[in-house]
Length: 251
Image 1: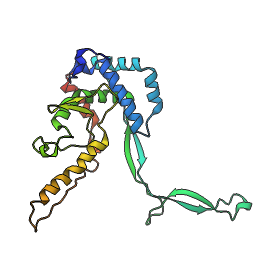
Image 2 (image 1 turned 135 degrees about the vertical axis):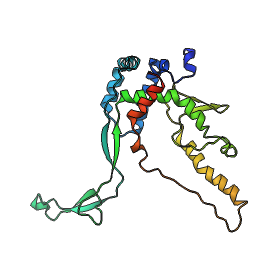
Image 3 (image 1 turned 120 degrees about the vertical axis):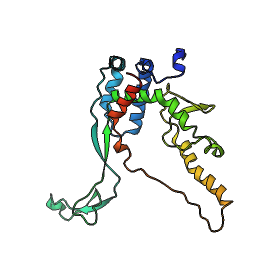
Image 4 (image 1 turned 90 degrees about the horizontal axis):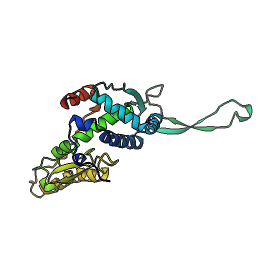
């Protein structure tokens, strides 16, 4: 399908942010990604947005243009984290004829030092599809610049230090030409294929470890260091983030 030339390169400016073509594709990406990744999604809201898509996109565009947009409140969804389960025998005692009959019940294993089960919870948040469209549109407008700075994750290992490439996780689906990223915003793909980037991530320390092993001394060791920023996303304030972007876009 041929589009207006203005859409060949999205720019992080107001004209693109309120454009209904951009917002429509942001909805398409958001809709598919939410359905595929979130098992606790509000499917009714997604189905409703499909039925009234033109109206919703138009309302989002008008609210952005008139500076009257109000974000919905986040809804906290406490999700149980992984836990060991087992079958246990029990007797209902509801029927005399079944008094000695044993049944199996599938239940979480209680912790050893507690009288009751302590089930760890993960605090997730539900965001409305309208708000997600807004955030996805922002992502689309910034994608080329941000991904160009981070560099092509498929770069040859001999060049990764020179080009300062360190990030291989959750990279957006881009094509690279002369180190410039071009985000494929018109299709439903959001991120690049996980296994490709992850294979690069795993192979990189092995590659450089083998190179160092060839020149290290007998009394030297090679280590691979892992860092985990625990609960990093819990500290992100989305309201301040949106205000920052909106002020930057001068909206």
